[in-house]
Image 1 (cartoon, helix red, strand yellow):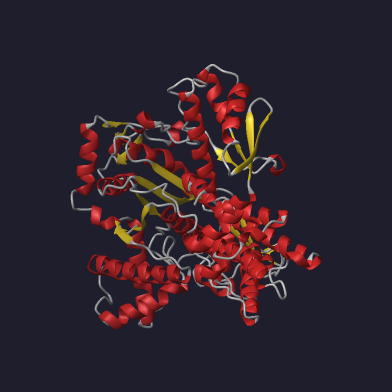
Image 2 (tube, rainbow, N blue to C red; image 1 turned 30 degrees about the vertical axis):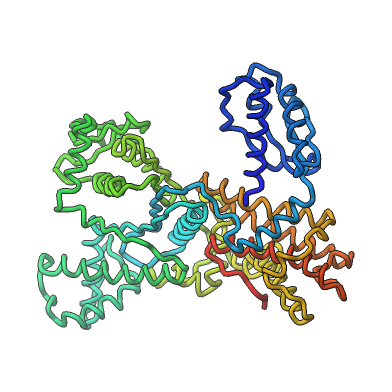
Length: 581
């Protein structure tokens, strides 16, 4: 049940009746008519912009439309008042029974309450993490992994058929450098003194890989030229790194549906076929580019390259796909990879990139627009940097990886749930400070504690009620006399619960899972506030001594809040707490 969608449908039905009665002209588009919470809760339970949206195309005054619409809406038993405000906004108040019914709906559907149909019949590919297979995941990867995974779960909850995908960047020069680095560790495993040249990977995490290579091949590659061992060690090392990355993702609770190897595009004709497709569209040509910004003319040698006309699709300049020496640019296999996704038949593509990929957004969108003839939208979400703080200072936890902080160390320090929730307490394109002191606090300042504590409080109520002999099964609570939830504080909490389905749809439309975290924090705050009211006003306590019927009704309210919190935490990949220690 989406109560806001129901009231919007009621509004549209009333507008149709006005057309039939000659109060509105026919043929008006109602796509932008909404039913949503008013900006000021004092104005009512919901507000509709119908009169404001339709006035201009109808050639009428908004207030005239609003007055007639208000009269029709007021006839519905769910509406206790429909008041016109300002130039034509319409504020609605709903009967208490409507809000009381929300608790029953939540108890009936459980954590599926709020599941939407926005994506019904549509498929979406969400590509995220996709770190180079040259080392373990670090904190920078963590934010993209959490964001992408939560977004995929959100879209699934909103009805999309979701594929979680990781592209393995195993087709570039970094794999050769990885192989050289592992070879040095292999020599080291044989007792040789080694030094790491610039560009190689000196992290200790490659020591076990060198040892494993020694165990597999013995002395086979000792004193051999690079052309003998570069490719086999590259393959061996990539497999080892991907196993390490999968283990890191598992620590974070992330499971991919598909791993796509970039190497599968090379020497298979797939890149050439994709670019031939663009060439036949007249989008490929040979030419030269303007010097990069900051380059003086005498620093720059203009060379003819093979270019893609990305400016035809909103990019700032055309982009090179093949260098003057015939080698592919990084962009060429990326185009072919996205062509593969388009040909797999997805209705929408989403990429989650790090902040350093901002310059890549327009060209990639241009390519997908061209390849799909504009039929497959690509949304690219950039995740900004994460800074770790402890005792008020920026904090470094590990040097085992070289010069970055490992995801695995972060998880061991604070746990999966804290890591995931905190990573979603800011919008993806805003910088995030991860303060170890705050995330360990048991206070309102620690958002994950605050939300989990709300769920744990309800769980404690359920345990105490069971001990008192009260049936608190969802079936029993759903059948309780919910009309007893008539205090304004109880109705206000139910109104917040009722916002959940609408919040899911809004967050899914904008691909913004942080909205779920924000909502959960607000809902938890409302629960805690209600709990505090009960300390002073005993009639608001969830368990009423010697009154099991009223207790069941009030516990139904608490249970509805807990169910929604559990559903939201499920989207974020966080485990609801049954008790706090």
